[in-house]
Length: 116
Image (cartoon, rainbow, N blue to C red):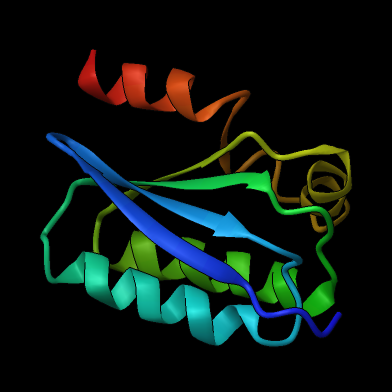
């Protein structure tokens, strides 16, 4: 996977959504790390990773997700993964993260839960 991961952020009163687009591959860890660093400055209690536009995820991409989970846990930030398509959902399952990760079917569902 060589395509660069696109990242944008939407802020809500009780959290932020990090919208990812493109395959989660070799460059993903750095781009996702940069987005999380920007979120740290906002002191938000929750982050939603929008995976709807992520068509594939390799081992390095899963490493980026695991690093994001650890980053969030160290800072006591709730991390929710939303709208993962079948390839990404299979990768999450293969790496044994389904029990540890908060997964939602859509960004809308995750945001509604936060804004509750």
